[in-house]
Image (cartoon, rainbow, N blue to C red; front, top):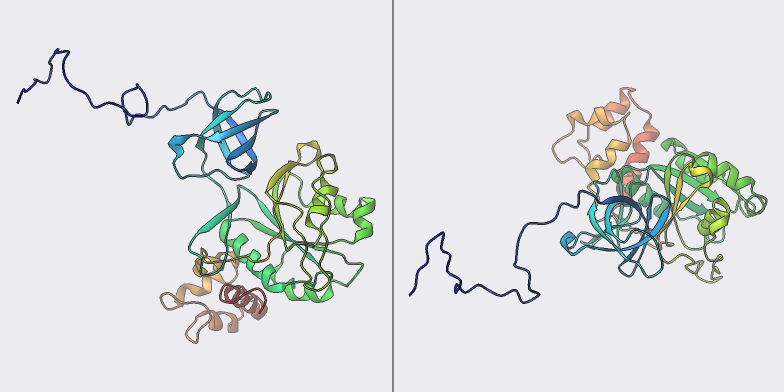
Length: 336
């Protein structure tokens, strides 16, 4: 067998060919220090629409990112053709660290979580007061996902012309969640959009809700110059609406004062990814009382220290009830 020294200048040394091209294999990846910053507006079958400065650019994920996927709201770094011209395509080479993440799973026993939106400040949970009927269990689950992902919740109630909001407001009053009530007439004349917009200015707000509750209609009123598909039909038998939004889409509010992210209507909101111990962080008045809880306390068992904390007057009993109701939401289906 012929041996070669470390510094040989022989030109007949055999090298392993690269089956994918003529370039030699290497583990060194380019740093792309000149990459431009962009915001992911929507994702459609592997193509990502991004905003780079004032241009809308089509892009695809670079191979070096592997299985890491970008979602709406992600701040990314792009290289390639950033002109935004027809038939041009850029590459996303980096996904910046996320400040918040809204996740869900298909079901509670589904091990695969899906990132719905990244970097949103606020989650607007839209529910109709009638047609279809409110689903408090779904609202509870959205609240848990918001608290777990670092988003502040906002409750938006629509169709107040069909039913009063009193019962729903009483149910969520102890959670101190900001809320707004709208009617169909207010949506048509613009009054509802103005009141909702006051709660969105300067923020990135993701809208989520059951199909048929008027979520996309509300987004259309907030961003009229970029209207989504028309409102879907609500089935009179099932009470379910037809999906009018098929992919998440980020839209700027007028005056660059914030963003709204319209998401597809949901019929379930799995919480398999949520660690119940993190839900307590949304209750700062109760969290100090967990110091004496037994290890791995579920906060809904006989030895939980929160009962004594509340009895001593450190917090309102209604707040403890609300915490336990949200924790229980992870263990039951929305239809219970």
